[in-house]
Length: 113
Length: 114
Image (tube, rainbow over all chains, first blue to last red; front, side, top):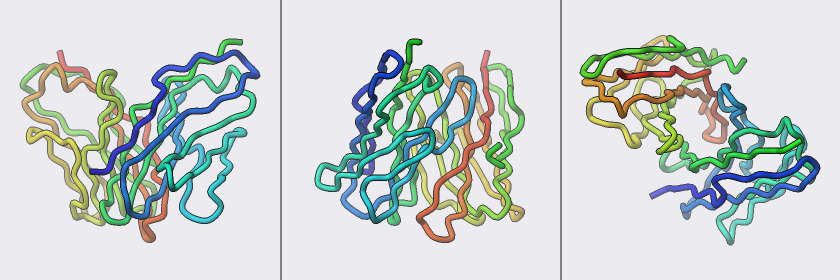
């Protein structure tokens, strides 16, 4: 069955620290990959997406993610976090075959000023 | 503003009751997804509709049902409510004309069962 695993449940960083959030998915077919962000009290918003092509994708607010097909991974990175990046981050995957958009458990990022 | 509208924003009801949550997708979007978000379970996929037809099913209880109407709005019906059904329910929509599209989320309906 299609599933998404996020390794870090709660991450605490100081401002200007670098961020990397892990995401692995299990599905052998062609997939689309996404990272969504949920700021406190708000709905989920798309950070970035990978459909095909260059495995390094850039999103909004300085975030990027790298798709490594051999590792079934799509890790999210940001070189220097800001206090305003405090939020919950969700990795998600869908596939042509299943039609389901499945999310990981989410990672809560707390950035200390 | 994502363009996806959910009503109501908040709902408080008693155990055993039935409620209906409503979602209006973005203009032109054919797919509607429903999710349940709770502290212990995270963001759980419930069900997806595409142009009025059920397309994919996730961890949706038998007490829950959904439908998508000809005007593409969708309703999620929750019946015989239990305390554990208290959660944030999100609706999302996507155009899905080509499967490579992202989903846009509404603000959610916070359901509290007392």
